Image 1: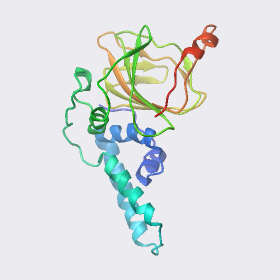
Image 2 (image 1 turned 90 degrees about the vertical axis):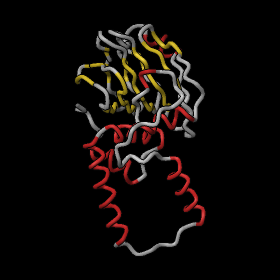
Image 3 (image 1 turned 30 degrees about the vertical axis):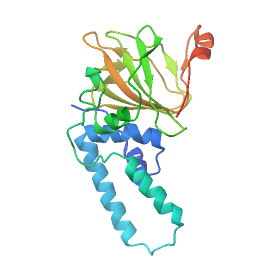
Image 4 (image 1 turned 135 degrees about the horizontal axis):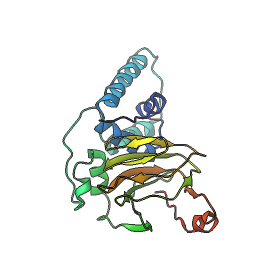
Length: 223
């Protein structure tokens, strides 16, 4: 059961097309996994369409149409629940990932995990934008991530397994938004690994005595 969702303002930004692409990918993946948010998204689109029909036509630049069609081609349709198209990834944890994730996998090289900390591995994804670092985070069974602060927005979707922090427990399909200044320490359950799909606006900052040194070593490459 999915318990954590994007708030209505974030869904509205996504539905209106005003949410940056990096963040939109994570919201889209959640919508594809969550019937409740899919219904809200459909309602927002219906209302938006009604408003547009009542507006007077406006002249637009010729390039605007081509940009719009390009965005439509790149987007994965989240309105209907569909069986994920399995990618060429050999990662069992990604077998049931939503279509937008598999679409990204098809456009990226085979997954190569980079160890960030004893309990954390990471794989960056190329997404054709430069505002967010989009990646998978793989946490080991019972692993604890160092307590850290956020310098920018971080959108996270649990794809496999579960983890907890001081605010709750997050399982497959759960969505988590962290804002600048939020501090937390994710802890994974003992029975299985956890895989998350994330978009990060800025590098996190490890808190504590060792943070001043470790923060210099944390890479951050949006794209």
